[in-house]
Image (tube, rainbow over all chains, first blue to last red; front, side, top):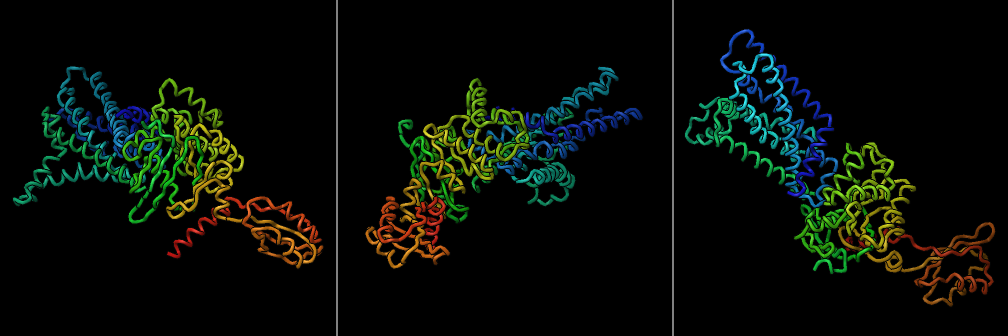
Length: 255
Length: 326
């Protein structure tokens, strides 16, 4: 993995000079800022059962569905469209180094953007006071840990979409579709357990429950760190990255 | 030890098939260090595929390829460290500055950080890119982009340079610059270039390899190829006098000089004829004497040297005929 850092730092630089990064960042912070304001407004009208952090992180899927495609759609699809993948792979760089370097940069930026939302809570602390019940540290830390761990998989799915597509727009749509299936498709199936009542379908129900991201979110914000859930994200990430590497290599073999 | 192998590139019985189509079919050749080889062939002949296999980018279906003594199949990383490659159409990232791009490529090619700065300055100087080193690549003209591609290929000072159509789309002035650049590598680096511009290959390359339908149809120096493929010399003669005396004037030359085409006399009474012979030496002076001895007046006599284009067309035509017969 000698060239990982070369590709990683290059990708970070390229993401920082790319307008789509800033569009994603502004869009993300505006959306999340409005949501946060909306949540605080609900608190100002009537007391709520849960802390603002729990309500805030409940909307994790909104930026995931839009920001992840914007951050990852270019990474491999654009290299292939321009033909620069060929020049990249004729240097002593391996395909895993290329894929992991690009993945690392996109994930780093994903974390940085989520990290920027920490400013919302800082402002809240400044106005409401550190001891306020609005700032419950448990859900806050749990929420950020969930975002960091689930982000591993979401960004890997984005990289996989970019590895499969030849065009960055197609990669963006494919990523959106895959993430929708993962987050909402699974949520839809998990909300209808009656569909899997037959004994033969029980393994499917178990799999759907295992991949139920909204439940993972619930557990994390309640402070429950389940090793099986972490394993789900880690194994899913590894699988998506392996398929990305295989896809790049398969397309290389086609010439 | 790989370093003691005198040849830079050795290709033996190389075959590459894609989905049932054989793009490269049993190609073998070797290259000495410092040699410049031109790959010629019509579109789809297998030139780019051969080059991609040499760089370690594509695996071969069968056969062996070694670069500087390292087999491409088992030691692709060692091969990649020794090859500077400029692919067809020279793909470059659109949103990087020239110096940034060269720095990034230098790091990928494992050029030491402290050496990289001076080396970038050097290649920018060699490729006449100093003025545009801070420009965005996407805004450069075709000529500058080609030179950025060449600068990138020679950046890590690899012993082998492979360039696929380095002069495509350039104007004559830019072609001259690129030609000089390639010529300056002679003796220092082993260079393979493919081109459709045949005079370009003739001027730049020590040896030419003509590929058609994935097979080598001819190889050698341009002079060897002329002899081998065309196999005859042609003279254009304009003379006046009795046409019946011309065969007598040509009779002393052995092997025979033959009249391959003869035109009607013009207003001044001069006829234009084409003479062919399998002799290699220049017969000009002897022909003039023989024609004068037969009282034929000569207005012009010139030897037509077949161009590489003629050789290329003849070689590829010959290979098509072989295929058709099969």
